[in-house]
Image (tube, rainbow, N blue to C red):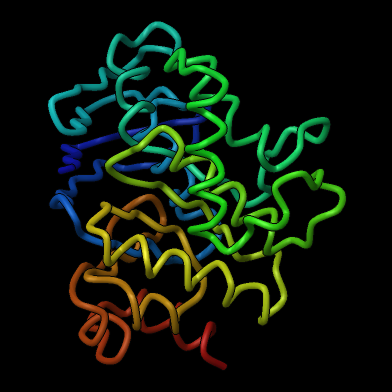
Length: 247
């Protein structure tokens, strides 16, 4: 599913977080958003998903348009966008009182009005896809960080989205657990989903992304294939950021 941003601006008070962002992402692309903290990467994802309003410009996700200066509840396109683009968060956001299976069943039952049996069958298939079929009846407190994040991916996939927005989903994990999650994302990429990833995992961005987009101070400062952007950056701001990341 194609995503197009045209001159998107977002402010918090007197601070401009996104400063005229224009970006087109083709269906099936994997795009890694990198850059220093405070650059606006997570805010950009939340605007695409309709979780944050924005102050100017337009956002189009497939045939759905998000309008500026509309809350996520008031914007007619926001609910449709969240049906086709799932979002996965750094802190998992699983329901602690529900098992892994129940977490995945919740949205299909509540939003899609699936039968309990249908939602359960779908949830079990998704748990198998992320390698957690044997943990279906475990609660989040009984899962490792990597397992929680894989459940969160399965939960997002339960709505059968055409793309995923991933916000620093490996930043809280140790290296071994990070790899568990990255393997799942690489599999989803091969299935043709559109993936937009905010990440500090430069190695993953180099290996898995079709494009790397660098944000700094609310602007796109570089955009291109990983080998170009990561291995031979042209923008001084990109060079500075990568030098700090790769020390």
